[in-house]
Length: 237
Image (cartoon, rainbow, N blue to C red; front, side):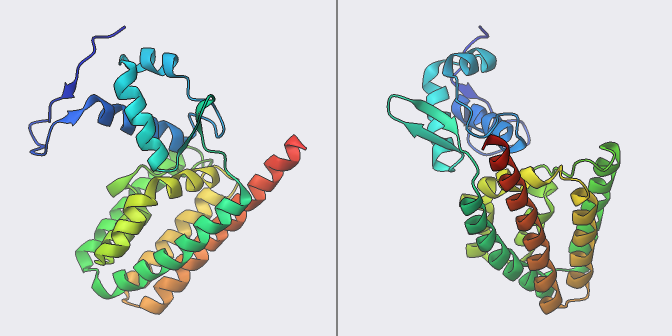
C-alpha cells in the first residue's frame, strides 16, 4: 500500500488552507460517481478503495460521509454505503428545480454579462465542440466548475443566493443526472446547438428569450433522461 499521509500541502499558487487526505479522496470519488465510473446502486467497497487510493479507513469513511451529504451516496446500517440509484420521480423533481432556477439565472445573466463574459462563453463552447468531435458526436460530458457551461451561466447571474443553490448543494447531484444524457444518440450535437442559442440571447441582452431557451434546453434533457430511465426499468422487468 502507498504511504499514508495526513495532509496534502497547498500548491504554490493556492494560498488557501492545506487540503486533507479526506478532501482529496472526496473529490476523486465524487468525480468517479458523477462520470459514471461507479454505477448507480453499486456498493462502496471500502477495502478496495483504501488500497486503490493508498489511504486508511478513517479519511476514506470521512469522504464517504461527505458524499452522503451531497446525496451521491446512501449509507444504511448493517449494509454499508452505495451509490444512489436514479429514479424517474427523483429526476422530475431535480429537473423541475433546474428548469426554474437556471432559467432565472439565464435571465439575470442577460442583463449583467459583459462582452468579455460572452466571449468567454464562446471560447468554452469552442472547447466543447472539440471534445464532441473527438468523441465522434457520441458524448458531451462537461468537466466541473469553470469548464461547465451551466456553471458559468449561473455565475454570470450575479445572484449569490442563486449561485449557492445551483453551484453548491445541488451542483454535483445535478451533474450526476446530466451525465446520464450526455451520451444519448443525437443529444450531444443538439445540446451544443442549444448552448449557442442561449449565448446569442445573453449577448443580445434579451433576458426573456434567454430564460425561455434555457428552460426549453433543460426540459429536453429531462424528457430524454426519463425515457432512458424508463427503458432501464423495462430491461429489468
